[in-house]
Image (cartoon, rainbow, N blue to C red; front, side):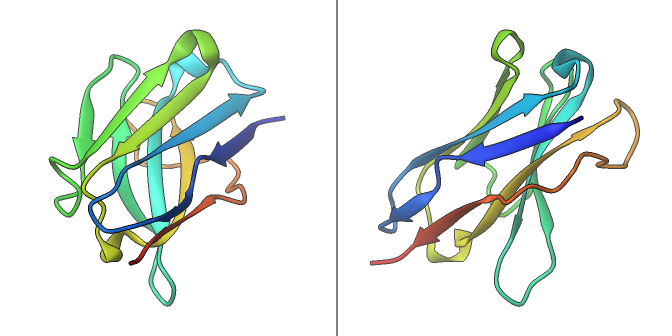
Length: 119
């Protein structure tokens, strides 16, 4: 059974940093692309960052240059380093998995981790 557990969120002031973690189990982690998504109140879930099995990364324009996605296949964990946080980054953050070269995020959507950027 696939499980994805997000952690690391919290309350941070504008300009601050957080590092999110996504621990995966029940899958062969290394063979899947990983993605971080977020959903702000009243808005649709959006894709924030992806990392392929080969380590290639891609980012939404809104976070480019501020967020960094990474993965540690030995630990079955993906990370999202978030710097220069803005109030607009406030959302619940989720991770998910994707078969390489496909567009479908097929893992279970977990509880996510809340990120609140506020002074």
